[in-house]
Length: 99
Image (cartoon, rainbow, N blue to C red; front, side, top):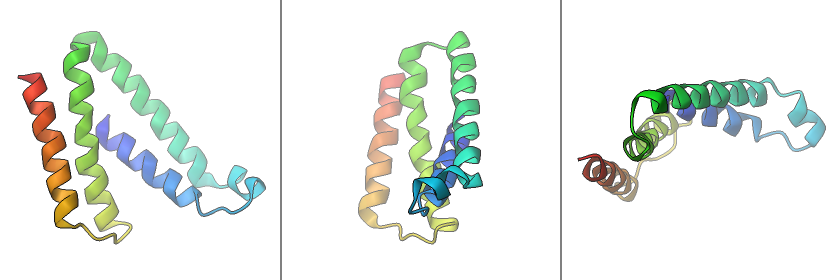
């Protein structure tokens, strides 16, 4: 679910390059991203059926890890020390909540 959500954001980022609404509406990346978000949301509902909300929601912060990896590998964005520390803090917070 979290990986799918991160890739959905990637496709929406690619679609964001369209400057006009008309071009955006025919951009396949927009629809790929929306479909991926939809599937991720359905997976979220399925997971919530079996796990507590107070556990599932904090664990979705794992999305930040995937997003950082995807932005580095695919979009060639820089990963700074601040970004790494920020993601570590988010993940540690999620772990503390789950425990």
